[in-house]
Amino acid sequence: MAFKEVNIRDIDKSAVKMISDEWALVTASADGAVNSMTVSWGGIGEIWGKDVVYIFIRPQRYTYELLEKTDVFSMSFFGGEYKKELTYFGRNSGRDGDKYEATGFTTVTLDSVECVEQAKVNLVCKKLAFQDIDPKGFIDESIENNYNGDYHRVYIGEIVKTYIAE
Image 1 (cartoon, rainbow, N blue to C red):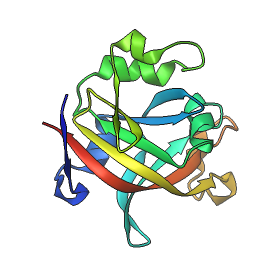
Image 2 (image 1 turned 90 degrees about the vertical axis):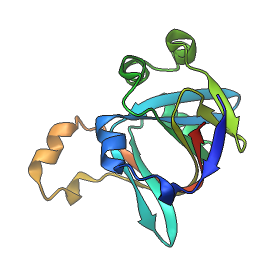
Image 3 (image 1 turned 45 degrees about the vertical axis):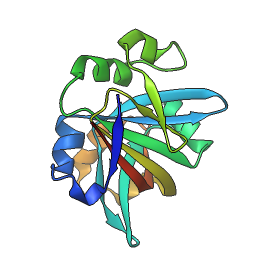
Image 4 (image 1 turned 180 degrees about the vertical axis):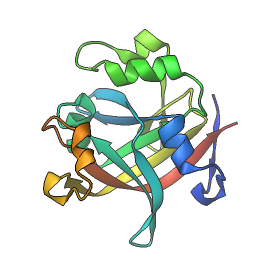
């Protein structure tokens, strides 16, 4: 599939819908390995004068391992399609098998960053910061129901390039 570069600010779809309802894949690569995982938590916005994404990754995830070894990653959005495949990417580890082979998805390199070819939108991102979730900061006690002691790391990534499928 061919992609063309656009400005992230020209995408007029709700970021909440894109992430929470339709889901996305975060892809990282390091040491010759590429892995994607499904995310349904996160956001797109602005901080420090930059357009950014923020994503939440648990430390036991293989994608976390790869993100720790690289300064770049991608987020891929599918417009609500491919829920079966995205469920597979969310429930299975890349340590145990090839998720791309299992789902029929393929990667495409955009600006030296692995993205997902079947996506409608691919964001090429550069890590800016991270922060580990600390339950001491939970004001709403019900938040703890999302955890079993395995708190996420929040990554903030600058959106360096935005590509849409042609």
